[in-house]
Length: 169
Image 1 (cartoon, rainbow, N blue to C red):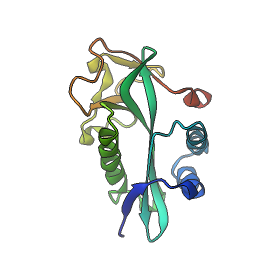
Image 2: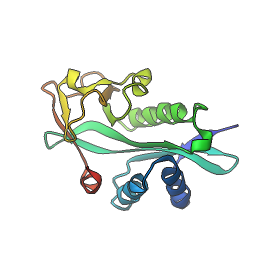
Image 3: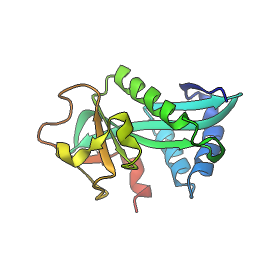
């Protein structure tokens, strides 16, 4: 399977929704991406494409630490069609997404995800850098510094944008 990674285009919304609905047990992530896009909070959105079909997606949106704008961004979501998983597509999306974040000037990325998966990309527990999260996650909340010195030295509470509040459990 030949896969290319590219920026989301305006006509990709329906295909991205199909990927998200197939990859997750509920439509919440698809609704979240629609909301982030509608509110212009989906700062970076990449898709994986194979034979003209979108088979994966990664998105990044703004975060704040203790209510202050920071140089950080949050990774959410990452999705690959179930039939295309375990072929390295998610890894390619993450690497391309992190490179896009770095080019866009972001200093660090946070993610709430599998502590067995994300460390291979350099993510470490965020609490070791003094960062907490509003969801109470510990080892699943991770951070990757893209540029030295950009994680607030005093740490703080990381909050995702208001779009996420509707989906918090």
